[in-house]
Image (cartoon, rainbow, N blue to C red; front, side, top):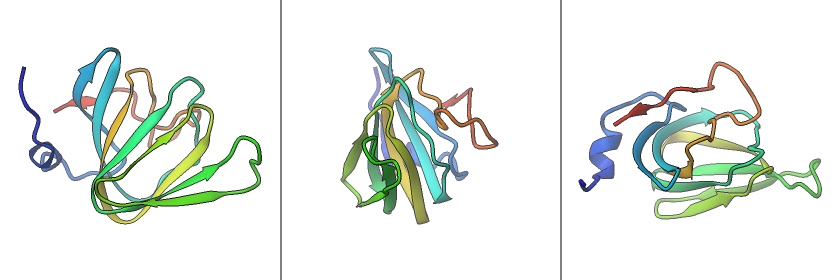
Length: 126
């Protein structure tokens, strides 16, 4: 049993859109990731995701299930989080670097239903 210092863990890497596992509990993982730029539109069939902003800010673009032609954007700042429900199409966009803590089931693939160069099947533990 150890405490986790987010700043120390986040200082261990500098690449973007490549989550690291910082902890695990009850089939869930606490992941740390840095974003800069635009991710891909995707959704997760079976998993909800929690995005908690540690440093920086970003815009979460979402397409509601009941109106997939519309787009909603929510800006998140340090100390704020958003829960994306399973099935909701979403895309994080960060004009500048942002540090995020994710809380999600261990089965969650970072690109959800989209497989591309940003897909990470094996995550490093830090």
